Length: 125
Image 1 (cartoon, rainbow, N blue to C red):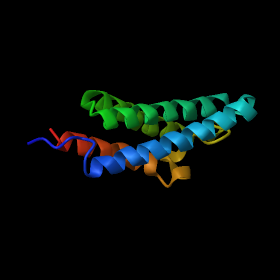
Image 2 (image 1 turned 60 degrees about the vertical axis):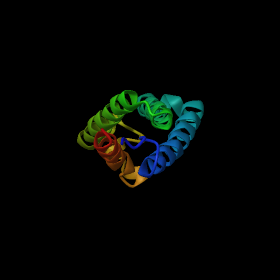
Image 3 (image 1 turned 45 degrees about the horizontal axis):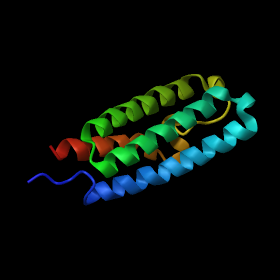
Image 4 (image 1 turned 120 degrees about the horizontal axis):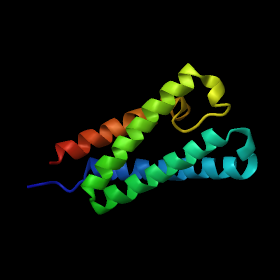
């Protein structure tokens, strides 16, 4: 019998993604409203991360496995690309994004979370 992706540890994933949706969304909203001209790329990337987190929260909640897998792939790629670019060229990111330094400002949870999510979803097949 297949275990629904939103049950057991999947509920914890939904909760964490919901929390990250709020945190990243609030951060991006304040940054865009107050200081967008200072670091438009960084603030736009934080808003994009928030959108991905919202999508993941909803996809996991509704059991939309394919959508969740695609969103986890986007999230992991974003963390790796933005993380690498922010380390190699810090001047390109005058202010941190959610994914800067591989999520350093969020205790590296943005780097670990998509790996946990992928493990959980792929294990549920």
